[in-house]
Image (tube, rainbow, N blue to C red):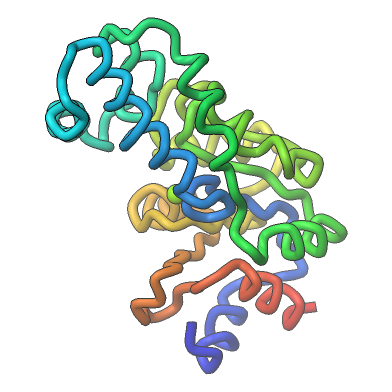
Amino acid sequence: MDLDLLPMIISRFHMKQIEVISFDAEGTIVTPDFSEAIWREAIPALYAETRGLDLAQAKRRVYEEYEAVGNQRLEWYDIEYWFSYLDLGSSRRVIQSCLDKIAYYPEVIDVLSSLAAKHRLIVASGTPLELLDFLLAGIKPYFARVFSSVSHFGQLKSPDFYLKLCAEMGVKPSRVIHVGDSWQFDCLNAREAGIHALYLDRSRRDHEECLSDLSQLKHILSLSV
Ligand SMILES: [Mg+2]
């Protein structure tokens, strides 16, 4: 983010009225390493083993199945759906084998610990709880609540999901900031619900008004006090 844009972003919020700061999980606080290990490696490897295919063949087939569903459908996110659909038995062993890949972005602990002093922090994720609980295990105490759109409300991160989340928290959307790395699910849909959404682009492709890491969120909030 261009620091010259900060005053513009800040002027749009009444920062002192911000009560809740909401974070997407994957790509925002948790790196993609765990998900990639499960979806791109461990599931195809198990599929190869059970079907007697080589790994490259298995990857091709499994990836095609993923693409045929796509990330606009609930099944995309549902590990139990995939284990059942691909006839792979229990997901437990595969999940366990990937737990050592869970990692947080470098600035996350510092940002959460300083923001938690003044705000209620929550997670608003599209990842089902079967995986989300593991992903957040190391940082759970920072959050007042963890919401999985799929597990709690049976939907993707739609405007309706954000409204329900605000109702559960007893807060007006205008008093919530949400930050995430999906333009559609974290920005457009949250904004439609009336939430202040900040787009995180860690690839630093130089969008206008986007954060390139979460420490900038801390900066924005500290300037407003
Ligand atoms: Mg994300």
